[in-house]
Image (cartoon, rainbow, N blue to C red; front, side, top):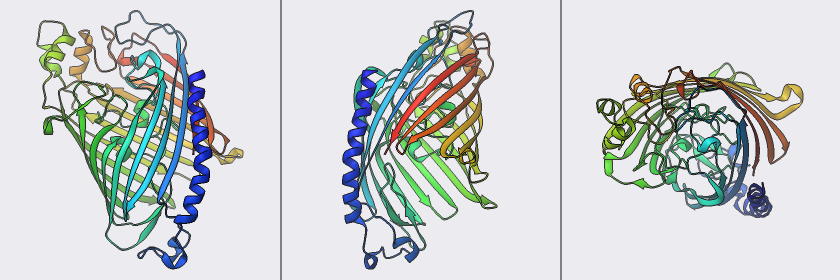
Length: 460
């Protein structure tokens, strides 16, 4: 318990220092009325705060566990049947600095400590979005993000950009091209969703926070090197990204091998209104090339199935797929979301999790009706599946990125999650969370598993 308190102490010191500094920065950076941006209409620019630099911070502690459940057998990557409780803690600084008109650099140093349940093994839709294979019982530090962003405006109407993590307050052309390059997460740009994308404040499960069948390029902590282009218009946006892959599954080191070891993604976003309520639909397609082994090739070999898959690895193996991601505000308090995703499932999963098809549906409700407007209740369900080739691989005792029970009585993995995010004070919230997981790791011989969690989150 002492180490998580150190990390939260780091956050509190940052908030104290940052509040005073930010106040000074806003006083200096706010343009006088006669110095408003050239293209900004008076109703937006007159009260806009233009930041030259920004400082934000977050700290998140998740304490999660489950009681004993039944299973007739367990394998190398199985979730243990005896109950266990684990914690993960992260603390992040979000630093931003304007370089010139439309350009800024961002740097996010991060502390992390703790390991997720069973060292992030045993469930394809893993229950802790802050958990990763690079967890540590000691406090570790690393660079989460270090990237540059250039915005090129095309003129016309403008809009205010609110200050946020990795986002300087500004006034930008609605019609614009944004170029982002450096170290960041592919999911920072793609597959966003207002109701289910951030495990630090929303749903914890991996297959709810992202489109589960998108094996997005990432290192063991979820970050990568790459470039993204975003063309934004009033009612739609088009995005393209090119990112590096690791040499080995879920490895920290990214390998440069040109087009034989990279991930590409294209996303089209459409914005619309149903009556007075806004909604968005995002359609994403991806194509990855890396060293992933082919299931059919391994299944045709007589030896150990896992060893045969590893021996089949070679640069240039491909995986492709698509995802549909929808969100819709229903009224001022209630919103709904849905995700559908699929990949071809011929090669082993490399960086995210072992899901080849997934369908998720959920709602998010603010607490205004019971006098708690800053509280949020979330309820969602997801069903995950894998290809017939991967089923045969696991039936033969194969081990994958995150699951492998030694044998398999296949059934889709079904997950129900509910959380209540309680705003304690302005910067701090507390969230009890419950997940019911049926057929963990696609195995109807095991479970169900009841997983309980408490999340403490502070954000400035």
